Length: 149
Image 1 (tube, helix red, strand yellow):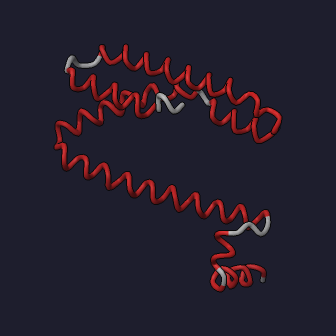
Image 2 (image 1 turned 90 degrees about the vertical axis):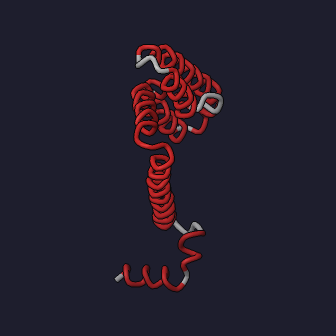
């Protein structure tokens, strides 16, 4: 059984399995492990962060924050339009397309800026509380990553 030998190697030499690339299958397994671990830690930290934020802000203020996040999340689709997946696929397919990186970065910046303008304009159609508008503006800039594209 090949699985027995493989798991024995993991127990005897975990450093070689999780930190060094030895073959195609092992590299896929190693990368899958680290990606799963990082996503799991990210989810757990977000869970506790939102609980902590809810305790600090209280029900009313957390509701405003939740509304702002939901409002901005509606427009988040327009900031990407599937561009990230297309770019990853095309750059992985042909290494000669790296000269197009500047054009893609400019398009991503344009989409993010346009979406931020739509969020800003749309914030005037929500309840007239200036506090909620400010939350929407800050969350829009943060989620769309203006300046980092």
